[in-house]
Image (cartoon, rainbow, N blue to C red; front, side, top):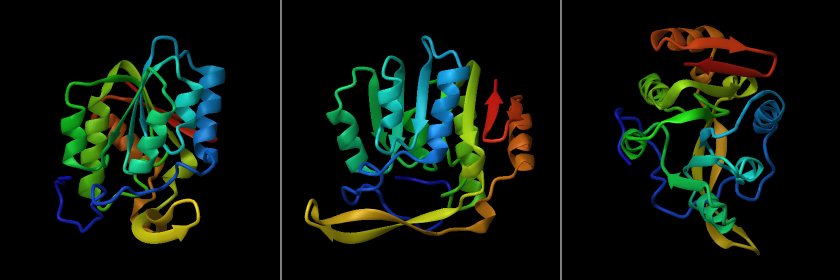
Length: 210
């Protein structure tokens, strides 16, 4: 994968990394799902889901066209094993140049990313990602993120691991990240203003609407 910064990083194409495919849905993603089910009209909406994890999100909204992004090949293997007809996934780092290229002619009514800045290598990379993300929103489209995810900062490190199910395998381990990746309301509101988006929030989620 290619990037617009010179930060050192893991090449996610090197190995079939395992990450979140066997783990439970996070509370942050659950809050977004709960909001969508109760308060959002999803009829005929196209969705971009950043960080597919165990594909619980796709199973909940399988009637919608969902395009998922992940850095874990094992998550992709699980996603396609589900056989959901409206679900397509891509192995790609959202902060990379490849993200822009792969989704060049695509746009969405709804974008979901619980951790917009949490794993960013630097501010340049994050700003580049957000600009690309905003350009992927259709007219009247909405980007939703988690308030809890905005204060989360981690780095992913590759690790050779072993268990009796997978034997020796490569996994992505979360370690302490950069505290500058805490995303404030002020920064997110400023980004929204640059791209003429409406910014709002409640006690759990933030919304950016075109």
